[in-house]
Length: 195
Image (cartoon, rainbow, N blue to C red; front, side):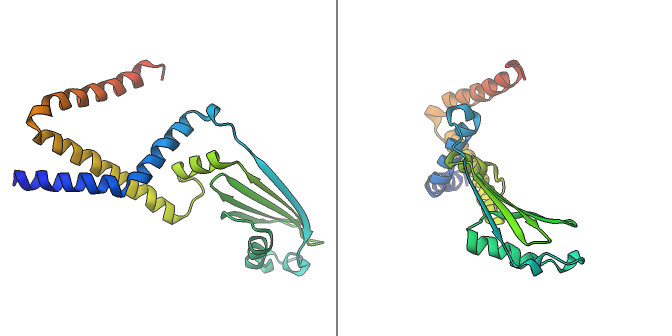
């Protein structure tokens, strides 16, 4: 039984490490970029567009007749807006639509009487994009699954590594000492660095 556990742990440790190598590296690098935002200045780009859409989509007194789907699809298809639809507000004089994605926002303000609009797109650059992916901010369900699976893989890699260490008689004591020292260092840094 012990031998089987050691074999399975070794197999899982090796192949889960290789399978999840890129994603573990991604979360390690973005952990650093998030912790040191001042090292990576944002490179914001801003684009603004004024235009007009079909006024029948937004005017009229009944706000339930505003063509939400047509408006969203127009900005996605014609103006290249991406990201998740974050907000769609309708008041008496204006419609506002907000899209958000990792490192990206787009806001549209539409005059309900004329059908004219003002679109503002902001892109915060590559580092903001990867930082938002690290946090799962403004991402879809698929990316949230990637984060969950990454956490599971990293946990399994760590646990199988500890199990393997326990089977290495010559390195077991030193390994456990380093494990305890690492835990102690993290706890001490947390409590004694002015938190």
